[in-house]
Image (cartoon, rainbow, N blue to C red; front, side, top):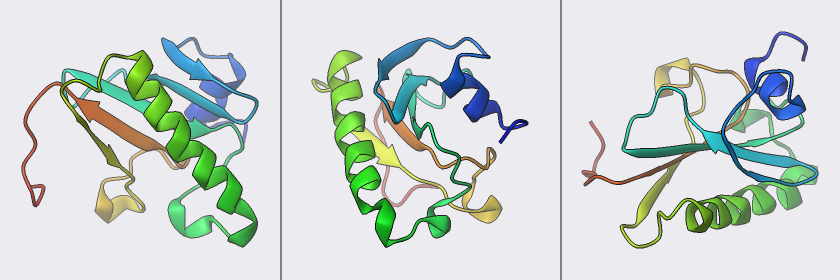
Amino acid sequence: MSSCIFCKIASGEIPSKKVLETDDIVAFHDVNPQAPKHLLVIPRRHIEKLADLNPTDIPLVGRLVVAAGEAARLAGMEADGYRLVINSGERAGQSVFHLHLHLLSGRDFQWPPG
């Protein structure tokens, strides 16, 4: 999608501080971090939200989660632990409508979240 900021980051049109890249996934530092360490993990293919996935996307979802773990390792998040979050829809806190996983670390987190 030509107007999607995450599509532009994935294609390299907008620079980002990337941690991991594969043929179908990019992980990069969030420019508006909500924790001392905050990465975003996205599919290169534009998928608006979690609810738009279908059964043919199961392999991609698995690769996204595995990539999140690898990005956490590469960014030095493993020692402190980390939280992986997917917001789906505006009321859930999704502000960019391109499926993305938030990888947060470097502070204590509460449950349930606020």
